[in-house]
Image (cartoon, rainbow, N blue to C red):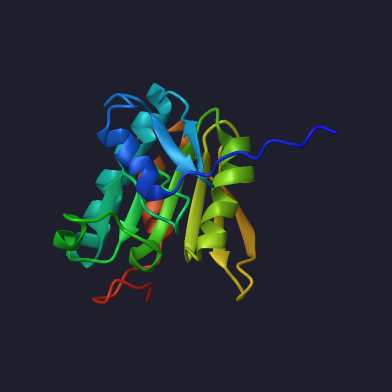
Length: 192
């Protein structure tokens, strides 16, 4: 009788050691999801432009009340180090010089999807929910919608609120409308 092989789940520490040992090249677009090293989709022009606009507008909106982190890792427990397209973090920025942000540091994560919407919805958003991230947005460029997921209960269940804005066809307005929809952040870095 054949025994099924168990897949090894890498820890965040093992993942970082693999990077330091040169297992991954500096330009490799990979992230650790539930202990598995996952290759990320290439970034297309629409995706990049939306992330750039989000960065600019959210940075202007939150000023020094939060840190806007773009396409850099966050650590969510022992087996996950995803790279959300945008994350809003509690300040000060100096606290992230020696370690990547963890769940208590995170106010909001945003995933921008041009071709990865199904994956982000099925894998990344539930990962953020299980980790206890208070709010996650999925900007689905293909569908022209923004799905807002907020923690609702102790079980980590999220309920989407779907919004459809025609601004996705107008490159100059996409991020400003997103930023205007986000609740202001008070001096402690929490939603007001």
